[in-house]
Length: 241
Image (cartoon, rainbow, N blue to C red; front, side, top):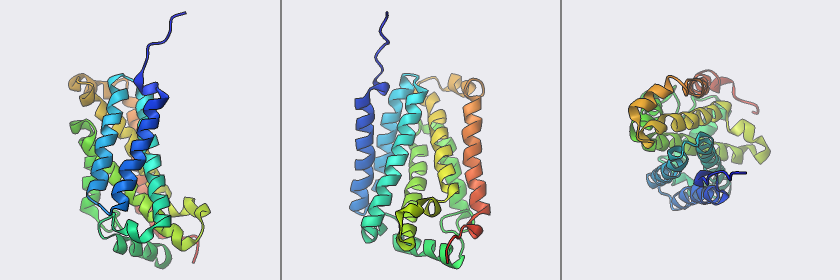
């Protein structure tokens, strides 16, 4: 019986190190109140870890790295916001104002902050950054934009949970459109970063229209649905008060 060739991207130690870096690159800049350094440190580290399974043609491992990283980063910020809300405000541009705006949206039916309704141009730039940014930079720019979305969603959810009073209300505090955007964007990051990371950009683009077409369409649909629901649901997303 022939042993399977060793793959670093399937080694438990590799995923353990990725998990440690996901938490460290999130927690340290956040606690230090570094809104610029937070997504930069996360994006650079995530891109380096993502390159390992992509270079080994291990798409399953690549998805595991990205979704595991996003989940841990968001969980870290949620917990830190719950425990250290005033400190976490410093980790985001206008964190205090954003935290207040989230409460005003939820309880007073104000416009949803940092959304299409309030920031159209930044939202459009964000879409381009996640998609074309991933494709043209091997994932670095796409990861930066995606992590900013994930970080802000986690901070917003943590801030809202403080007013709701129970962590069991997380499905309310973290709205479905944010989850769909993070999941869809994470899948697009993996698929669109692959051509440049693997060194066959032209063939990789053709592959996106061929063998990778189905997952590309699925994650594009998930991401697009998240954006659509962000336009339609915020006015109705009020379960208390």
